[in-house]
Structure formats: structure tokens, C-alpha cells
Image (cartoon, rainbow, N blue to C red; front, side, top):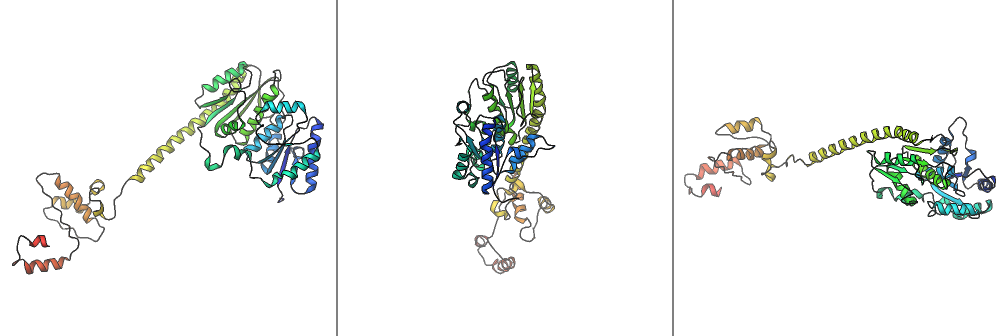
Amino acid sequence: MSDKVQCFVAYASEPASRAEPIELAIEAISTGGVVDIAGWKSVSVGGRVIISAICSQIRNCQLFIADVTGLNPNVLFELGYAIALNKRIWLLFDPNIERAKQDFSSFQLLTTVGYSSFSNSHEIVREFYKEEPYKSLDKTIFHDLLGPLESRKARRPTLLHLKPNVDTDAAIRIARRVASCPIPSVIDDPKEVQTQPFSWYVQHVNSAFAVSCQFLSTDYKSWELQNAKQALVAGLAHGLGKPLLMLALDPYVPPIDYRDMLRHHGTAAAAEAIYSDWLLPIIEDYENRKIEAQQYESEERARGELRSIAIGDPIAEFESDEVPDYFVPTNAYNEALRSKHSIFVGRKGTGKTASLYKLSEELRADPRNHICIVKPVDYELEGIMAMLSQQLAVADKGYLIESF
């Protein structure tokens, strides 16, 4: 593979007058040899689903270039997919086309994302070498909107649903089905907020457990702008690997990119049936993960409790009050408890002092016993015995033991 930056260009094939400057620019940049650049027409789709071949090309590129003039749904779906994969994005837009300019302004989602203006292929080439997007591959939209990985706050997994801006019977039924789902839901309703900021969609799709988008029929006013938003968000969800349902009310001829992914319906009942069938395994998966999460939390709590258990200091003298709480009785201890006289003999660390503390606690439980623990700082047994045998006869009995 070449060491050059791999670039992929997405643009509308129709009308040909719009495609021509893009294709001429691709040819000119390719001849320059600075980057490896290819348009979607160069993708080999023989024997493959088109969307799979396109997505594979986007995954392998480092710089994704898209012409958003006219808000082509194929291009927007691919753009959403590339953004989700954290690719460096470079947008092109021809502001000289009045209808395209109006639609782009009304679309709003991409108005906060910078683009390079052009009216011919020469301007595209000039802007490409002027801005040099191939030299700043780390400047990605996804990173800008979500922030560094370590600073992203974990959100509660939700079921994200994008309603159309027309309250059809199908839209109402599915919205009710979403609201009654055991998975917490977020509904993007254009009747409440016409268009959320693009960052809102990126953040909510990123944290979503699953995503569903309803596309309008071509019979409705402003269906193109409405479906353009759905295509962009669906591309985000597909790129992030979210379970995705794309549902369209007939009549609607879907773009070739996601034609095999889209589900069609005529009646509201049919739409609800499709949605319920799609949702059922998602709910099951959600419940299973919830149980696994609860089990994990329970295990973590148990580990925390285990880590907090004190197993005793190696030197029993350092925690004389705590020793009886964790002392394990031994044969020597039980024998001493039953005997009138006992001497513990053993090497350091064999439990002599710990047994002493436990014995004292056990014997103090009987009020008839008075316990006195004598702990010399240091001594030699033979020396003590010699002093006692030599001095006992002449010593003042009241002070001998105290002196020792």
C-alpha cells in the first residue's frame, strides 16, 4: 500500500453539470501525486452490496471529501458514516446555486461545520492545496464534538428515535411504541424542536443502544430536507455500529447507498409491525446486558468488601484490640483454655502473642477471673532465673518483682 494519504470523494452523480467539476478536480489532484485520491465511481462493487463496498472504501481512507451541494442523501449517509469513524472531513459547497444555498441554510445541521466554496474544478484544486487537509488528519469533527476520549462522560444507554416533521398515523404509533419501551428513550420531534444542533445528534447517537429513523413519503412538502437529516444521522448510527432501523412511508424511492437497508410500509399498522419485530431482540439484548451489569456491580461490591477485610498485622502487639475479631482457634489455644497452667513455646510469628490476647478476652468474660498481662520489653530467661535464685533470699519482697 502507498504511504500517501488515502482520500475518498463522495458527490452526487446527477446532474452531470455538478459532478463534472468534482471529477475533473479528482483527476487533477491525482496527477499531482501528493495524495492517493478516488471518487465513488472507482469503487468496485462486483458481486457485493453497494453500501458494503462504499463503507469499506471509507474505512480504508484517511481523508473523506464530500460535496454537500444539493444535500444528496447518498453523500450525507456516507458523510455521517465517515464522521462516526473519526475520519478527517473536508467539505465542498457551491454557493452559486441558489436552491442549494437555500436548502443548506434551512438544513442547519452542517452550518456550523466549515466548508470550502467552489464554482469550478480549478477552485477545488486551489483550495485543496491551500488548506492542505491531508496534513491535519487528527482534526476530526467527531473529536471536536465529543472531546477527547478520556473526557467523554458516559451517558445512560437509550433508544433514540427520529420522528418525521409530519404527524402521520405511522409516526404517532411508533412514537407511542418507543415511549412504552422498557429501554429509556429519546425522541427527536421536529414539532417540539425543529432541528437540534449537530453535536446533539452525534452525542446521542454515540450513547444510544439503538437508533430508528422515519423517512417521509415524496408526497409531503419538504420531504427532501427531512429525509436528508435522517440519512445523515442514519450514517452516524451505521458507522458507530448501532442497531439501526430505517423506515420509509411509500411512495419513496431510496438512494442506492442504503436501498437494501431501508424498510418500506404503506399503512400505520404495517409500520408498527416492522418496528416491533425490529425492537424485540433489541429489548432482549438490553435486558440481558442489564442483568450482566447488575451481576458485575454485585461482584465488584463483593471484591471491595473482600479487599477491606483485615487479615491482621504480622506483629500481633500492634493491634491487640483487633486480634480477637479474626483469631482462628488452634489446638494449642484450646488446650491452654482448658488447662490450669500452660507455657507457649515457639518461634517468632507462630501465634504466641495472638493466642495470649484471645485467651485474655475469653477468660475476662467470666467475672470471677482477673487477668493481668505482663509484657517485658526484652529479657533473657536464664538471666532472670539466675537473679531470682541469687537475690530472692535477701531482696525486699515488696520491690523485687516491680524492679524486674
